[in-house]
Amino acid sequence: MDPKIKYLLHLADNSLILGQRLGEWCGHGPVLEQDIALTNISLDLIGQARMIYQYIASMPGQKTNEDTLAMLRYENEYLNLLLVEHPNKNFGLTIARQFFFDAFHLIQTEGLTHHPDAQLNAIAVKSLKEIKYHYRYSSEWLLRLGDGTEESHRIMQESVDALWRFTGELFKMASYETALLNESYTLDVTTLEAEWMQRVSSIATEAGLKLPEKEVMLYGGKEGKHTEHMGYILTELQYMQRTFPQMNW
Amino acid sequence: MQIKDHITRRQIADCLHDVADPEIPIVSIVDLGMVLDIRPENSHWRVDLAPTYSGCPAIDVIPFLVKAKLEDSGYQNIHIEMEVSPPWSTDWISEEGKEKLNAYGIAPPNGKASEQQYEGKPRNCPQCGSIETELISRFGATPCKASYKCLTCLEPFEYFKCF
Image (cartoon, rainbow over all chains, first blue to last red; front, side, top):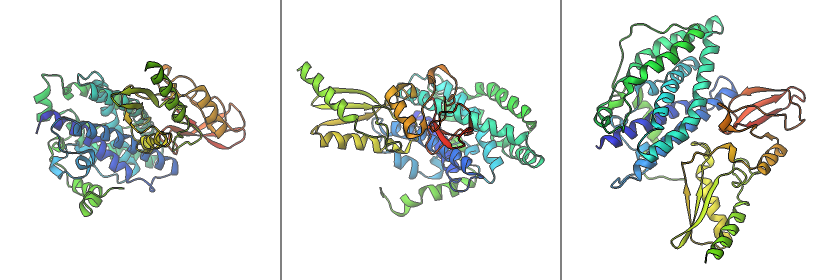
């Protein structure tokens, strides 16, 4: 597959899968306002993914459409980060996952607003406005829970510890990213780590949370090798299309 | 021909004033600043619309409503495009649109999105006019709104965020 398509799929899949995860909170949020907040963020992310899938489908020679891309690929064809497929489990884990991703998504999308491809550039400019809100939301909750009660602090620290091993992948180049680096189609994600670390550690410190120092990092999602959680997400995401192919409403 | 086009453009624009936003029907898509351009193109008329938030559930309904309205008004060859760029901003909401929102009970965006980092806060409670208000949640029933409460009349209300 054309590395450009793979890269675009990687960007879109991050948003789609995290959007799907956040959507699982619908009707289950800890309080009504947070239920609405998480699902609003979910909508933004799915909308951003849609714009990219639509863009891919519009390219010459692509015999596909946005629904097929979102709903009918196999697991190893999804190129999202392992971090975003991690289950919600509790509000603390959801917030830690969101915070790690939002800080990355913000820096990455800022980088894409200078992209030579006009359409990807436009999508980045539009998405960035929304991502700033997401980042502020998850930062505020990290502070509130980390610096909250003894129990909220403990859960937040456990969540940060549990998800840290997925953060290394944010800054590891996938084969398609390396292949396109020369023509400036992809960002060199290794250069984004310093700013991410600075943002994450300053807010974590303010929240009274410790970032793990040494951790064995897990990789694979960007190349289509996922954790066991991915199959369950896709089962739910794809159920209707697999059961009633081409269904529409 | 150019004069005729000019008249047609004006007539199409007038029709679009009747297309209500599906989520906030008190305002039209023109009030919200979603209509970017109306122009003749080959043998049809092209209408460029700016989607508001990427994930707004109304994103698929609006082009459908626009097409239906224009067809009802006798324009058969209409081509609608949703344009990602330039990104929609609340700075494009008309003064009339802001007044309608306020009268409907939604505090309109206060100030220019382009001049501040985030969403700003409501000038006053749309119900009683008090300037004493408090944020409940940065998110509301739709992506474009935040939830507030008035500290004077104690009523909850929504604030259309600067964006």
